[in-house]
Image (cartoon, rainbow, N blue to C red; front, side, top):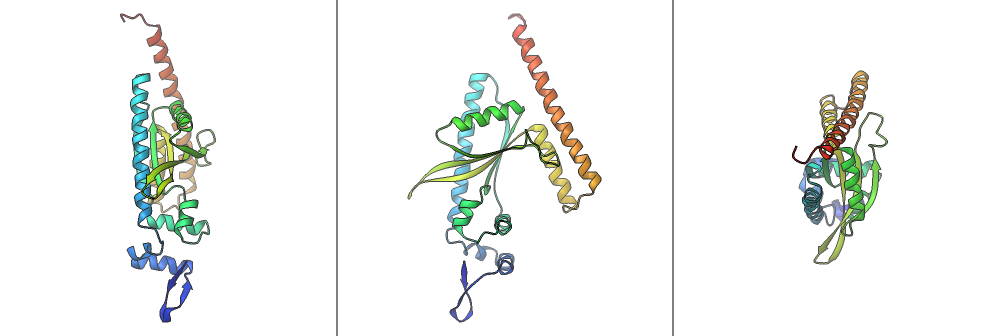
Length: 238
């Protein structure tokens, strides 16, 4: 990537210059990426398309099984500064092509379910759909991170029909239970408060809290199974 400097010379920007330009010029920084203005729109369209698919899944699930396992859905587009920092961490030259091919979480969706079994059922369904392509799955539920973080991350490619033809846009989906989502939200707040310099005893207690959240998930699932069994064995008039 180059930018025109004095005397008409094209010189490569250093990482420091990129950061300074980003901080000083804001919107002008975006013009360094040749197709930047189109990218946020495409990622937003992909999120909306995926949201519509999830709504249909919810409706069909409720019709067939009698309940909707998805508690709520949130979406977001990654902030430009965060995208830039991630590209720098990966050692990527700043270009739209590198951004599109190597940064998979620009568009993000969080799906919060009541139970762990619902998360796996939903992922199984996504893998069977012909209008989506599951690219990658990272299961931090079966194998939590060292700090106790639990979630199931899925990268999907959402096809969009554009004027120039079809294009697949990657979206990261994070699936959690209510307990996992509560823990992750609290962990984020605490780390932000301490500016990531969290005392060791706080990290230890956070890990213990994650284990407690996992136990709560298992307990609630056990209670659900018991209630379902009771309802199935009860007389019809009851």
